[in-house]
Image (spheres, rainbow, N blue to C red):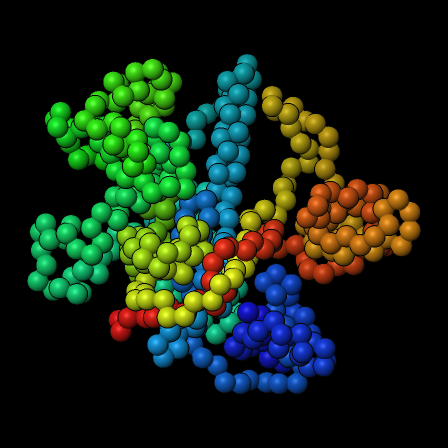
Length: 444
């Protein structure tokens, strides 16, 4: 679907690609933004709108966003977005800076008094990498609200269960034997072992929970004693201990032992920021509904959808059944956070010594690194049309990053700006799915 704004840049209902092409061809609209694609009407103010819901599946490396419209008995998908964060890059940069500072202070330089007593963290403090994930998600929530009439937000909140709403008298161990029984644990193990059989490295096959120390030999149901394995390996292992089953593969035994002790860094990051994200979404003033990760996994498995961040966001909340199926694909807009450059005047090598110098200004001939441009070269060895991100040079001869690679030495007079750099890179991916998904919605 194509986002639509009226003459005063107020959001209207998204339209189809065909209708957008007709409006542009007849001169009734103009292109407002390329990514995500949005048109602005030139002859209309206001109009009939219907409330849309924005579904969010927060993650450590990527966050899924799904814009849906709830009709009388169906949930129609309008847009799927996968937002990829750069929290790992921020953490690595901070570690590098920490090492350089520690090296400078440990050398034979002038003594510097410690400053640890005057460093205090305020209420609600988050690490820079977590703060980036939170602010990036909220940035796209605000952008989508400016492009579409969003009236409702649904967020996946890990520790939340709807069983008590269905059965107010539920208590004790009954919580663990409901509809979502086992889904939280299975999802944890799937993420921990990268959805791969630990014994034969099979990927994309049905996986089962296996006990490292079999229960027949005194093994427990603790998560530290559980792995995932394919059906064949699970049957071949039977009641053997892992040392006997993998007696001829010491490297694999060591790898599994290491994986059992490895914590879920990404899961910890999501748990650390989930309440801060919920508070930020609530501060928008829109109604916010929460759902558990087990509910999302349950809906996705029951509907037979592939695993992806955007589809996880689509399955957040309460869904009953697939109402209509059409074979095809759904395009997903992949948005990758790239940052806004650096304040450093030089690059540095592995030892921290300067290598090369950067420009003092970020603009050259009206262009900035990261701008989306279309370059039409009329003649020469680089004859042709190139579209992509531009990397500026002081000489005026730019590099253009296209989908086929980098084209160097494009003169600035051949470049035409299509969208200013906003700190993100955009690309479209097509998920093998249904072209027009409509899901039944529960009464809740």
